Length: 212
Image 1: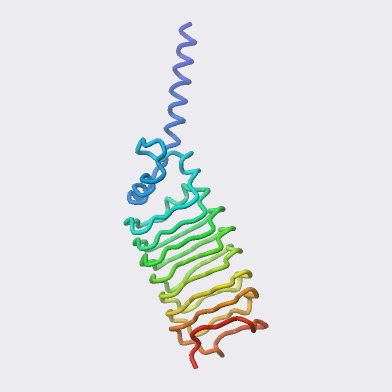
Image 2: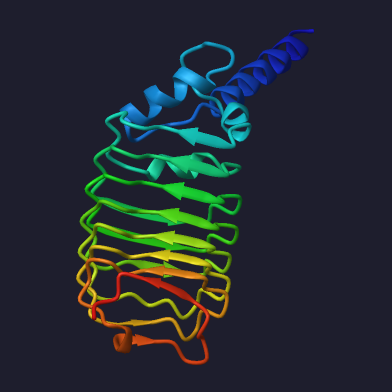
């Protein structure tokens, strides 16, 4: 009888440890606070793994967030809006459900994204970007990078890109020959003439802001 009680108690402790192990650890306390306000369903002051798994949209504007590392806790998130925070460096990867990411006015100086198979809309305008690294993002449809410090951008991988806005950067040339789906290109505020745009066989794109 004693052995059964010990075994039962051991199972109870083990189960409790497993349950507690589902509590998620956040690195950015402002991120955690903003998430708890909306997604702590059982109101215990802790975000648990099942609760994070239900989150598909994160609208966290002006929350004092300084890091996006905690996004990795939300494997099913489809839309993330982090506008008007202060995030100097961003690395995004392996968020397989992510479709839209916006981080405008965040003072970003470094941005790297890779292996985002479903990302179709990316908004990074009004930041401090001098370069940007985008790899294995095959579904990008709309890309907005206006009001940055970009001097060069590689667009060759974006075969379904339809709308590109790079106005008010430091670009002097741009190659859209590898973007057969491109419909609109905004290059206003750059020192780019129409002859500086490599179009290839692409002739039906609408271009805004080319210098005379």
